[in-house]
Image (cartoon, rainbow over all chains, first blue to last red; front, side):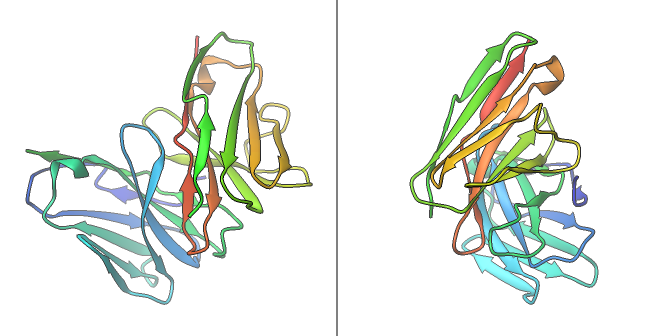
Length: 113
Length: 113
């Protein structure tokens, strides 16, 4: 079953602008992860944030986590045409790679050149 | 991190037939996970495959429809049996990596006609 909602479902911005996507989840987690999927192919792991962390950065990516609100956000700064993809948040209840992930519904991001 | 080779990448099948999807990992892993992604939707976990024991299926998925084999620590197959058009989806396998994230195969795009 799906863990929660992501918004927006679709986002179209101009190249160079920042893109923000939000994710909510329902149950307690060990960590939350963000993935990118290009054209319905395999998923690429972007970043992982643990339940005791509030913010994490990786290159142009910034992720926040608010466990009290059961929500997370992904910010992509200085967007590029190559960032056009679907982005999914996914939660791992116990960590350790033993349980698989529960995915949000995803945000389809389009970067206009 | 692990690299997964998944095949076939796509197939068009007649209803009532079965398709077996294979995933080969370049390192030994305890757990392998199979997901379904219906058109325009997010990923849903089908089952977890542990070498030497029967796969564990999520609610809504049954072994008769999605039999899984896990003969060793680097290989697994998922069979989609007695297919109907509703089975048209992308099927992905996945393994956990040491950092807590997951690596995914490139997906199998199945169309049932």
